Length: 365
Length: 270
Image (tube, rainbow over all chains, first blue to last red):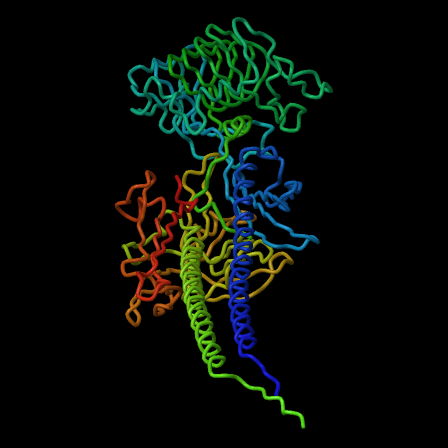
C-alpha cells in the first residue's frame, strides 16, 4: 500500500495561503505606488506651472505695447533637464493694460509618454503712473499771471496728434488750489479759463506729490533717463535722419508729429534746483527738484511735476498738466493749457508695473 | 512459503502524526488569521487614507479659485461657496448674448441655465483701472456658434447698454460659477463628507468617509493664520480630517489617523 503523509498537504496549503497573502499585499502596495506616483506627477506639474507663471511675471518677456490688443504670442518652451518637465507660456493682450498669461507644465515619462499636465492662467494689468488731469495746473503755493500769460482748462488735442488722441473731454478747472485767495489777479480777460477757472481743493497739501500712486515721484526720479541742471539750452528734437538718438541729452522727443522719428519718444527728465530750460520743443515727464524755469520758445507736451517753484516766461508753453508743490508764476506770453491726451501719452513713457486683477488666478490645464 | 509483507501504522505512529498535524495546523491557522487581520487593517487604513485624500483633493480643487466674496458661509461642519466652473475669453458681447471662444476656454462642464451664473469682467479706464469689476449675470440658455470664424459657446444673458459699451474690447475675461455647499452629515451612525449644488437645489451627495465624530472640520483663517471673524476677511481655510480603523489585535484599541491641510486660494491673497 502506498503511504502518503499529510504533511505535504499541510505545507502546500500553508504555501498557498502565504502566496495569496503576499500577492494581496503586493497588489495593494502596487496600487498605492501607482496612485502615489500619479499624485506626485500631478503635484509636480501643478507646482511647476504656478512657479513658472510667477517667474514670467517677474521677468516679463515683452515691452507693454509691443503686442497689439487682441493678439497672442507663444513664448519659447522651457525644458527642465532631468525632470521630464516642459513649460509653455503664452501671452494674450486683452486690452490697453490687461493681459492673460497662460503657463502649462507637462511631465513626460519614458518614450515621451505624457504622464501629467496642468496649467495656470493669470490676468494681470500693466499699471502706469496716474496723473490727475482734471486741471491745467494744480498748485499748492501762490499762482501769479502777468503779461499776456494764460491758463486754460479746456481739453486740447495737439494739432498733429488727432490720429492718436480720443475726442477731447469736457472742460475742467484751469487752476486747482487749496486756497483761491492765493491766486494773483489776471492781467487780461480770459487769462485764467476753465470750468471753473479756479477750483478750491483741500486735498492739495504741500506733500501731495509724494502720494502719487501707483508710481511714486521717487520711482519716477529713479526711472529718469535725462538729468539736467543750471542753464540748459537747445532742448529740441535731433536733426531728421539721425534715427532719434536718445543719447542726445537735448533730445526730449518730438511733439510736432506722432509720425516723426522721435514722435513716440517720451523721456523722463529730472531738472535740478535752479534749472532754466530753453529750446524749441520736448515732451514726456519733466520733474523739477527745486526752482524750475521754462523760457524762450520752449513748448513742452506732457506732465510737469514741480517739487519747488515753477516759472514760465517769454513764449514758453506747457501742453498737458502741471502739478506744483510750490508757487507758480507765468509771465510774458507763456501759457499752460490742459491736454488729457498729452498726459496719457507722456505716462506711457514710464516703466510700468505688473498689477493684479481681481479673480485673476485661473486653473487652466 | 514466503511470509506476506505487512504494512501499516502502529498506534504510536498515528498518535504522533495526529499530534504533529494538530500542532502544525494550529500554528498555520493562527498565522493565517493574524495575516488576515493585518491585511484587513492595512486595507482599512488605506481606505481611510484614500478617504482623506479624496476629501482634501475635492475641497482644494473646488476652493482653488475662490476670490473675495465667494466664501458665503462657513461653520465647523459646513461651507458654502461660489465654485468656478468655466474661465474663458469672450469674443462678442451683446445685450442678450455673450460668445466665448472655444479655443480660449477652460471648463469642468458646460454651463447650465438656471444652475450657473456668468461673471463678466468690466475693465476700468485709463492707465490705472481702479473701477474694474466682475459683474454677475444670469445664464438663460447655452448653445454653440461661431465668432469671427472660430467655434464659440453662446451664452444667453441680459446686459444693460452701459455694460456692453464698457466691455467693448476685443477679448473680455468671463467666468461661470455655481453655489456649492460641502458639509458633514450622519448616515447609519457614521459621519460622511458630502456636497450639493445650492444653485441646482440638490440634496447632499456623499463624497467620502466615514470619519470620526467631529471631523472633518472647516476653519476660515485670516492672513495671519488665525481664525477669521467672517468669510469676507478669510484668506485661507484649514481642513481637518480624522478617522479610525479596527486594531490589529482582537479587542485591541482602534488605530486613529488624521489629515490636516491648509488651502490658500491665490485670489484671496491681497
